[in-house]
Each structure stands twice: as C-alpha cells, then as structure tokens.
Image (cartoon, rainbow, N blue to C red; front, top):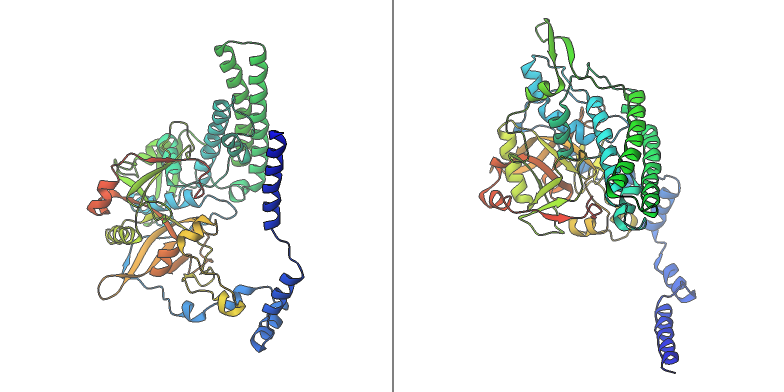
Length: 468
C-alpha cells in the first residue's frame, strides 16, 4: 500500500513538471503576432532582409571602420605576412612568427620563413600517440564515460596553443620553409585529418576489445600491457604512413642554401634541434614565458591548468594565469615597447571587418536594425558558449593617447597579405576588453601582484572545460 502511494506521489510530481512546460497555443501565438508591429521602419527592414541575406552589411557602423587608422606609436619590428590557408594551424604560425624576426636578422634574410609543414607532421604524430595512450589509460572505463567520450569525439585536430609549439620545438626543433615545403595536405588539412581520425577511432575501439579479451582470458598485467602497446603501435604506423604520404618525411639533418639581403649565396648545415636552439634564447621556456588570460568567469590572480591539453606525452600542459584586462594591457604595452611581439589569441570573428582589417565593439548594430535585445557581457558570452578564443595572431603594435594610455592595438595575422589591412588587423582598446583572451609574455613585464600570483600551484580544469 505504501509503495502504491509512493508511485502516485511521483506520478503527480511528474505531471506537475509536464504541465509547467507549455506549448505555443492560440493565446501565445496571438501575443507573438501582436508583438510584430508593421510600422514603417519594420516594413522597410523586412523588405531589405527578404531580398538580401547579408545582415552584417546592413548593420555595419561605417563610422566605426572609418574612425580607425593603422598608424601606431609603438610597433615591433616585424616583416612579412604568412598564410595558413585551409588549416587550423594559427597557433603554430603565430608561435613561429614570434621568433621569425630573430631568424631574419641572424641570417640577414628578410624573406625568411619556417617550415610549418615540418612541425605539423610531428604535431599530428604526437597527438595521435597521446590519444592512443589516453585510450589505453581509460580502457577499464565504460565507453560512455565522459572522459572516454571526450577522447573518442575528436582524436586529433590541427588546433592548439603556444605550449604545443614549445613541446614540439624542444623535441624536434624547426627548419626553414625550403627544407620541408608545404604540400596540398598541409595547406588544406581536412581530408587527411578525416582519414587519420577514422583510423584512430578504430584503434581506440580495437584497444578496448583487446583489453576485454585479455581480461576474459585472465591474462597477466605484462601480457595485457604488451598486447595494448602492440595495438597502439600498429595504429601509429598507419598514422605515420598517412602523414609521410601526404606531407613528406621530416629531415633529421639538412643543408639549406639561400641568397641573403646582400645577394650572397649562403649555405647552412644543421639539424632541426640545433637550428631551433640557435634562434630561441636559453630561457625560452614556461619558467620565463607565461600565458596570461582574461576569463571573467573565474577568479583573477589564480593559475589554471587544462588537464591533458598538450601534444607530447612528456610535454607541458596548457597553463595560464587569469588576470584583469588592465594588468594584461599594462604588460603587453611594456613588451611592445621592448620590441618583443607576443603570441595572442582572441575571438576574431566578433565585431570585426576582415576586409578593412578593423575590429571595434560597435562594428555592427543588429539591435537597432532588427529591433531586438542582444546585450551580454563577456562573462555571459563565455558561459553561453557564444564567445571564446577562435584564432591566434601576433600582437605587435599599440597606439596610445597623450597620457600613454592604449587606444588601439594591432595583430600580425596569418591569412595572407590580401586579408585585412595588408595582412594586419587593427582593433580598438574597447574590443581588447571584450574579445581578447590570452597572451604569452615574458614574466618580467608583469606587475608585482601578477608575478607573485604566478607562483601558485595550478588549479586543474578538466579537458572538456567550457573554455576549450
């Protein structure tokens, strides 16, 4: 009898829940129709939009574009614009662009650039190995477990952040672009990635099957470990084969000839590691360089680490110090004044005109034109997944007012010289507040409070955290 009353109570609670979720009935529909008042402004907007799907062109604030020039009081000495084409390697291009001026000066070669294809090969292979190791480490978890699902969802991708480049540089070095040129598949990565991810998903499933069979057979730990490693290496061999076929095999040593700015033919013999070590300072590491980030959803002056966000097993994870924008700008301006460009990333698609090369927080007025409310602050945009860092570029210029306060900034982009303002993107200081996310900078440019905060042990965030 008590059980019967319990079910009755549960059913009643469920009925209340269902009843509270209402459909669009006649009353609601009448209210919605009544809210659409066809005054002259509304009819004009309707006529425009029904004949033209480009809302951005109709809502752009031309004054915002025209008000921004591309002249700067402080500008890092950088030369040349790169082009990542149809790939997600902005983080790699930006990281290499940050050290490219050093190479241009050292080798007296203003046209110098790195082989992004070389580092891309190793990034893909290392990410594949990390994924396979993650599948082995979670082999005893259910396939519907959140961590397992996260790994299986997208085994490898060509996106990343600065720490991934650091891991690659320390392990494999770098080479000039002529040593391992771009290929069709490094310039447009989608199809190759599709094949590799399909093979890796199969490998992830196979690894779990091997484990299950060995457990059923009551095999020992050494036998199980050997079987899992065998399945991993079989998949990794296939990944290497696809990469070598599509990208070419990376050199272990090379001879590079070029004609310098004086017209002289120069020959350089090196290994990738030696070449890398000759370009980066001895303190080019996470102890000297730090990623600082503006994330208003979390406490400032705290250090955070993203679990498993790296490419090499032995490499460092993504770690950042969360700071207010004022602290970040202060440090960034110091770095630019010292002629040191910075890896930076932002939500480049928001309030930007890529043709004009201008970003302004008032770039588009959808609200006035459409008659709707779109207002959200940065925290709300992040938590609702509307905004997040989408692209990395080199932060290399700042213009200030008579009090030396920033009014606008500039990125060196990696979308080619035809994009933006001759390859550069200028953004207002207010846009910095709203859509800039992270910068990699030398710690010496931080203020005392930030330097002290950087000493804290990181707070670990899961790999599937909403910011990543």
